[in-house]
Image (cartoon, rainbow, N blue to C red):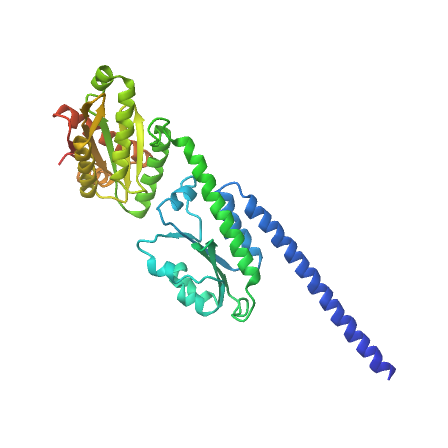
Length: 374
């Protein structure tokens, strides 16, 4: 009888030890999660935030993480990645135009299980799907709007069981969504310092930074990019005859007209004085020529009224594209040198400026595409 009692006591002590150890592990996990949550909320920029979400979060027994953000107005990717030259591993973007079905298929609450891996395999490299045995899908929401999804992947089939409660994951998703939205808003605020005070177009400093970034991105993605250089014809005469106030009004109106003819992802900048430049990423020369011609004709048709007088203005526009520069090197039988690769943005801008000069020298109020030697 005594032996039986001793055995029962031993079993109770062992059970108590297990419960205490589990309680300590849970406490440590909760402390780690609280620290992680505070770090995510306090992240001071995209690089720090994505390092936490895509790398540091793996310490919570996660083998791999995918984060996909909805880019409705073609600005989120630019705001969050342009200051970082390399891509964030595991981060991607989808837009509402080409990914309507994908976005509409995102659930309102976290979903766990094995079927998620095959259903959302577009977030995982095909060759990697067989490595993972269970997953958790976290919808990132602000209000009723889905701003993205996070996929937590595990090689353990029981790690994310579909019968497990998802309250914890729902809180995690809400915290990450808030942090991403705050980061986007901070980047928007920083961008205000890149605007021209008169016209609200971007300033030259921002244009130069964006052109380099977009040239590098389009080169990596093997897509084309076109640069437009635009100059107001006889602008000095407008200032001399009507005064600088009228000249300023002309520039403000010109930016408004140009902005109406381009996409929200395109960059309209005041390069200096009455000179403007536009970056058209992922655009071929033919489409860019159509955009430039629409700008030219809209400006010519616009009449500004000052002191009961109708003032007409025109612009000259020069175009050059990345593909032209590369093609020129090919027909010359030359490789683009390392120096030229690092300065493709300057080469492109220089070619657009040459085309603008040609437009002004041959009559103004026209669009000229920089011709390459044959």
